[in-house]
Length: 427
Image (cartoon, rainbow, N blue to C red; front, top):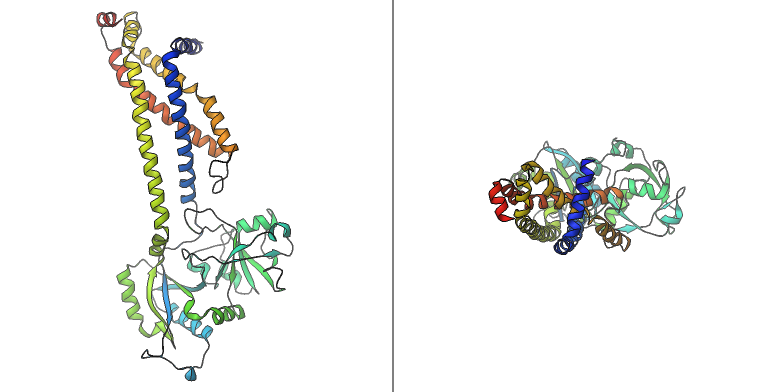
């Protein structure tokens, strides 16, 4: 009852001082709408960046491949060749794998993480939702079975994918996002698909892995892995050439670029099979940094602008409530002279400022709902939902409440310590 009485009293005071409070109310509306929009954008960026990538590139290096030209000292003429390009590539992988410091080796074609691979192909489930599948293409990553060990990718049950691929015929691995599109919550493992209507070749879904993201700034898109083994591997290597393959190697521990160059020198002949050879190495962390440099610069600029605007809001709101409280020293002094305690004075002023803030909830809420209805927010990377709204809206009001209380704190502390005679002098 006492609290309700105090709030009613505060609302009456705010109403009677509506001429001065009107400008503060208008300022709070603009500031709250701006801060909420900025916090929502930052929340989307933050959640997207820190979401699981689906792959682990720690200690993974790309060994750069080339084919010796006819002027090279160790060039092998075509007349002396006794093996095919797929055989040379498999032999090179095996030689590198036997080196003591190497954990695992795989080959991909335009599918290595952070390689800008952009191959898209249709995929039609034979016993799934063909209506949705036939209307779009999906990104396909072409990889050898060892890829899932190199990049530490398990299936959705936490089991090894490589083991599931050993006995599978024409296997593919789909992501969970694609499984949801095709089978609407049912398991996709063991189902059959065809690449598109132009071929009758049936592929078998050997496993389903968690969602995979291309970069930290993108959401997970439905995609699948076309596993290169047996005749499929031979076909792709012969078509794209062995030297075009992305040879990815996971080392057993972390090495610097200089240490890796030393390891390459120590490997010596292990890095050459006929005319196929390794001429250099690049860390996937370095590759990631190069690929994301533009997006990270853009993100830093966006964060800098947001912090600059928040700093302006911070000083503006604190200054407004500081001056407002300072101008009412006489009123606070009179309350002290009439017996009000210092604690009650502070509580009264804090509640008055917060009541003024709470009165803005309905207009700001209308603004927020209109922004969502007109699709002016980023709903592609993170869908609009009650959880996202409550987090960003609550954070906005808590931030503003802190600024208001900080603006009131110092002047009200000084005023509440005034002697009664000095208080009456101000009044």
